[in-house]
Length: 134
Image (cartoon, rainbow, N blue to C red):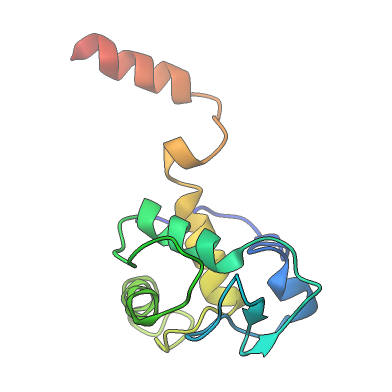
């Protein structure tokens, strides 16, 4: 897993970090009940927990079903992601919470998965060359 480079937008995960720059998504948060960062936030639109579950699943982490509930499986999946991504003191200690640093790292890895991002110049040529040699 190699993260994409460049700055990350602060509006990721339904804009949670725009209104809560130092906040974190955590165990107990829930899309259905609009609980994010440990508090009910009625002005937040979208389903950031389900998006987080989908992103981690897409990059190979087992986090349970994509149900919008930040339960134990998602918590442990985030811990594993943090251990892999920030090993050796690269940014933060694993805590199972999704602060902006963790969220941006997840999105940067997702951006490297060809089926999850917009096509880039060279994608077609590479894919075409691989299919012709197979």
